[in-house]
Image (cartoon, rainbow over all chains, first blue to last red; front, side, top):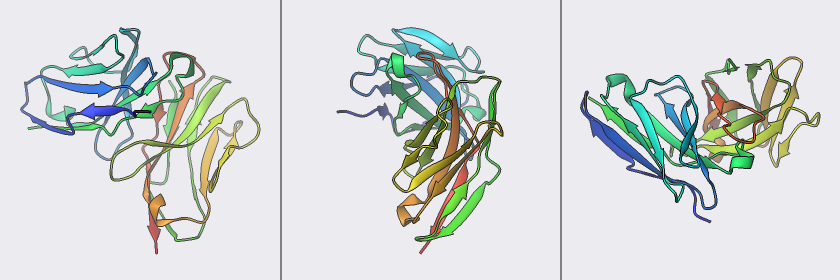
Length: 113
Length: 116
């Protein structure tokens, strides 16, 4: 069974740029959630995708957007990067009927300068 | 909105001893899930234990057990026979009992140090 994978591991961007982070779900999982974890804080829910549609969103502006593909992999896109976007971005996958069992990837560390 | 509070930013324990991490939460729901996640320096978030609110019996997983007090909205984690590998950041988390669209609400975390 393949676990959740994320790429890249680390990323450095400049303020105002755009970034795309990628996530591959655990085998058989059809729901993907994204979280932002600022340094020294707990993860904050960004949004969730199920059947290629956004299925719930946290308190994040529209410049945070996502996609889910037919193979259930997912992308997180952030436009007009701000310094406060520097964080660890975590992806978690789950089965739709067991959404409370979320399995996390290792995260992507984004630094905005 | 649901909130999760961990009032202990740091805790330490001697190897082989027992430590308890505290968590309180606020919700108006009657059915929900509570979790403890472990995040070592590798950053991978690992599920330690899960508790369903409708179950009165406290969950246990080997050396890890919880004390779930629903009326007090308290959910503490007890680690027995602490090992060096238990050193990590521990997060308490809450999820509503939905079959889809479940989102985890996390506390701020407790950094656990295990001393040899």
